[in-house]
Length: 225
View 1 (cartoon, one colour):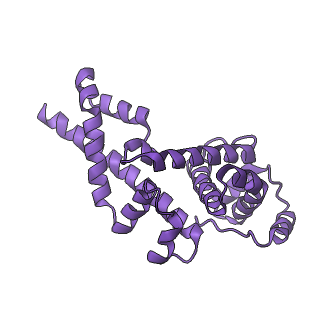
View 2: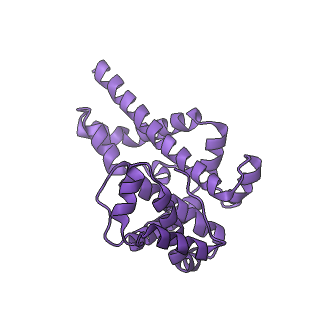
């Protein structure tokens, strides 16, 4: 799913909403269309929601680029959760998306303040990781002692398995001296939105790889016990 903006012509975007007869709050209908392969209502909802939240996002981030970035990231997560995973959609979808944007902005600021990569920086769920490790049948004391070391090894291996482009996009989040937009020309992206999506997809790939490595480590532990 590619998310694009129609920021320069909000009047045209509103007319499309009227043409489709889709109310911005009818998120169930919009999601059902996307699940059936008709992405136009969702794309229109995407643009409509950004226009609704634009002033709040600018107030939050103080930057047009950062506003677009956190919005795109949040909408990607929204798409994954409600279109792909088919979870129950929120009653107030626009308010929900704004809270996602606030969380994404806080996470982004926190990540840039860190000096090293951690599992938390790539949004791996700590509780899920703990549960996965305990399910291997290891003694709880050993699990607690080995937990951080296993995560660190898995993250290092997962990072090394990524392409140079993906590694650079992820490491950019931790470099306060370099803006993400600086990498747009270097990596040949035609627009900023495509760059933000590429970064988000790289993070998802990294998270999946970390879980794969953790699972493999657990299987190896079982065979040696």
